[in-house]
Length: 556
Image 1 (cartoon, rainbow, N blue to C red):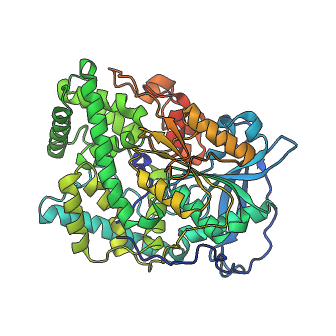
Image 2: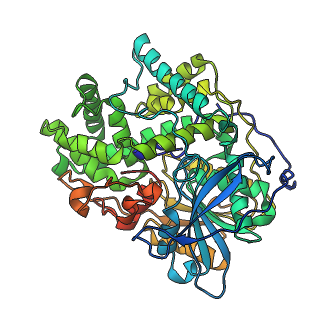
């Protein structure tokens, strides 16, 4: 469930674990005893992007069942309310797991209508283990340094090298963080949300979560239904597939979205000169993959790195013009420079990526059971690859440490719920990272929820990205708490048209050239650093949509 730009995938995993089934109307599990939390001390944040952004830290129990024991520190940001009719805290989460949410508070407060945002304290946070929270995990620095073994394991040697990489990563996590890993999971993070609620003195929280953040929100609502206010969940993880089955569904969906991109390139043949038949264009892409497997582009972009570079296009079509231009330059001009630059800007690993991936694996490997027999992985992934080759094995290796994880898995909660106020669910029909079926599944599991669909949309994370129809539904919900309702029997309660496709751009220009600065100029959008202060106008995309997808971890 996870980006690969910055190497975070919006969701992830391969055989679903068993699900603990609680009656839908049951009270949440008994809460552990708590100790009083120190009041938050908000101070000005060192950022020029959002001058009103404030920062604070909060100590919470590492193990919420032992409130007097060891603590971890959460890093928080806030844009405080200014209206008299204060509604309470609005917590925001960009997904991952492993995504930093510090920069999200300023973005959401600036993107909602001013009169709506003014009624909330918009609060972002780095979840436990992430970013500026302490301890911040980094299991094996440089795990994704180029050039990695070919993701498609042709032969025993190729498979063995990839398996050993995954095994080594799991071993490194176990060696460095074995005392922490049992508490890096979704339930613990949901309990952290409630600690934030307690620290700000609110009887309930409001919430906007994207991608994995939708699952986090659904788990919180299951644990604390009486503390749920207005919950908007955008691009929904299918809670019935946590986590192995969800990843397999994602593999098929990303392959379909990659074919959508190939079809778009074919329609722009006058610009990119790669053919008018999508099948011809796709064949050229796989020939490019074969070529970089023999000679990595710029000594950096092998087949795995090539897949990483093009995965952001599966999350956000605003990257299509740049990716197509790099593709064209490589094929038609024998120029690997634009392709290498695209990799550097959209997918090259950095410290934030290492941290995000460490938390991603820690949460997903702990949340649910994964196959421990590598023969299961081999069989399943070759079957997927035969039908959906674009990222099947790439995603398998991304999640493979879970086959060797050092901490026993939990049993996922059943997040069915009939005890919460109406939730707003937003979902694009062609989303690759969290396929449409996940939004429908959660809609059916949460009584009284409302499903708003972006028909024909393929981007992941659809609200506050420039679609006025979706944004109007979100603003109305946070303004009044009311949700749209369709006639009985309709699957969706409201439907919005997708945004127009991006326009072709011939030159594979870098964000630095367009924005006057590097997209990685000493900071990460996920950490609230300099990158969060730039709203790059990626080719064919709005500045707001491009910035949203950088904050969600979908591009450089």
